[in-house]
Image (cartoon, rainbow, N blue to C red; front, top):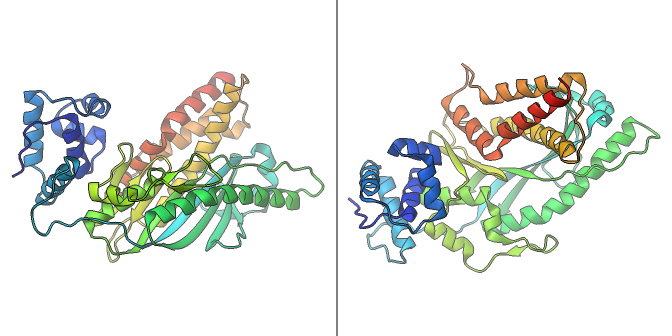
Length: 387
């Protein structure tokens, strides 16, 4: 049994990381307020009171042997101590194969009508959004498509297969390719609009951001390395220097190795499991490692959810931006506040046929994207301006 002589917020956060729980779930298990866990993050060196130390001792004692071993290893690394027990694996960077899905949404509004009419019908996703699809015709991507949503959003989806020597290499590729991908997406949508409306002057749209979903495939990590690998896939900004977007560079020699050694976990990322399969959702992306021969989630289910999430994010962002500019948002009658309310309910309400694995994935993605809050804000704004 591991003994912690003096619990501080740092050790408390470390325990949460090895249990792979959200702040709320961890607090609920301990019977404390989530605010207490948040305070640890603000002041990690502050010593816990005796009563709280007893709670943490009890929580550590209830951990599985694997969780206790991970805690012991990470605690030693945190203190700069050597880990003495034989057989404790030290996770390190390694080559891997991933499938990258990039989502590039842009609001077009009524200009999108001709594209929607030209697209091939596609079944609605979890948000119930009517959509059609057009060919992307990206020169180097494994697959590409333009998803056209009736509510006024065009979303470019690029599927790319990569073999990389390290996750730093992947992170640099990700950010370096963003600039060219955004430019290409705007040009591709412009060409499609010109084809559908000959003679019309079409300003080139500019997707504002890119979200990525990564499926981890071939790799050599055991669980001790897979967990930080998924975290780093979700939060690649910790590996690179982005001060000059035109010249993305590694953050520094050995940074990735330290992240693996210490068991990196971003405080805002939310892990979700599917049996032996594992995933992590974060603000800028989602990573997932499906296990073969297991009834787990599929990456296609994650992609289907993200299509609706990113389309609704772009739509709500447009509405809120109009308000910030001092104007009243006006949407066509079918896509007013009731439309947003319906999408909100469909995305946030569990269905009888939904598996537990799918539910935790959906909740993790919605929590980290903060889409529910934005939908409510946009819904209120439309209700006020279009009662």
